[in-house]
Length: 238
Image (tube, rainbow, N blue to C red):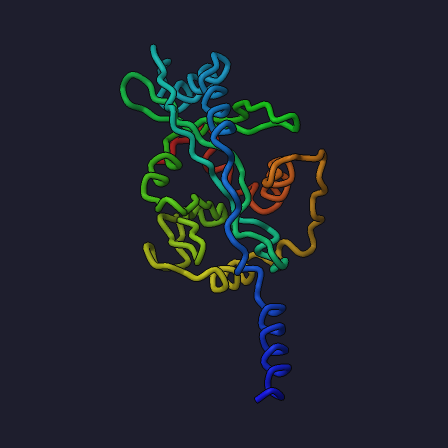
């Protein structure tokens, strides 16, 4: 019996070392003070002015009043390192915090709020509609909202896998749980070849947060720039 212990230990070690990047736990969410700061930034006059421009471009009229939600939705994007299979890479990286603005007739726009290197939050863009707020209401308490921009796909990211909520070109059944290893294999097949020749963005500044947003945005732009154009402020999401 004793002679088996080294073999068992070796097998356990090999299994641990061979665990794919997909086994990584989801990233941490921004802290409550961060979310409060994002909401406050979304309510600034300059931010509501950006929202007003969106309403004008999409709906053709200037709203007389704009109400900014007190709810902030951390929004994650598919992590290029997860696609590559980098050990320990989480499936998603924080891209922005979404805050909904609503005009007097019920039209919605999403203010995309991000921090700079010093941790000061501000609105850098606005999209028509309120996908993030709407879809996040369907998430379990321990889940995150994940976007796969290439298919305009929205997922519930859980500790064990992803559930597709909606997509323009679904690659898996809507509502079905896909394990993280399986999802990593899928996105690696879909996107890794396009990522490999591209340089990995280097951090432009240090961050004291667990989630380094400047780096996250740089990586996400490499992975997702073309599809994000679909939600630019000049177009409605229909």
